Image (cartoon, rainbow, N blue to C red; front, side, top):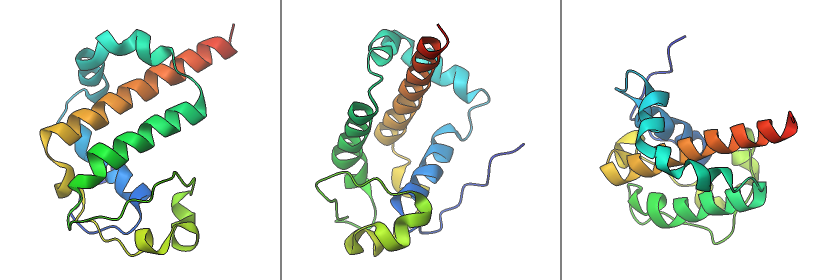
Length: 139
C-alpha cells in the first residue's frame, strides 16, 4: 500500500500536520526504517530506557515547542505552554482557539535538515520504546 501523497496544502490542526511531517520525513527514502535505524542506532540504549508515557509525551512536546513549531510558516505561530491531549478528530472543538485558527503551509515549512533529523530521531526513539515495552510485556 502506498503512503498518501505529500501535499503543500495548509492544515489547521497540528496533529494532522504532524502526519504530513512524518510523510515528508520519509519521502524519497527507499527503506525508511533501515535508513532511520542506521542513522540513530547509537541512541538505542538511551531510547529503551524511557518508557513512561508522560515523560515521552513531555519530551516530544518540548521538542515540538522549541525546535519544530518555531519553523512554522507563517510566523509567529502561537504555542501554548502546556501539553493538551487532543485527538485529531477533537481539534475543532477541544484545541485552544489560537491553535485552531493556525494555518500551516504544509510540509514545505519543515523541509529543512534540522527538522527532518529531529522527526527521524523521534520516529527511531518511538520504535525502540515500543519494542522495549512489548519485550517487557511478553516476558
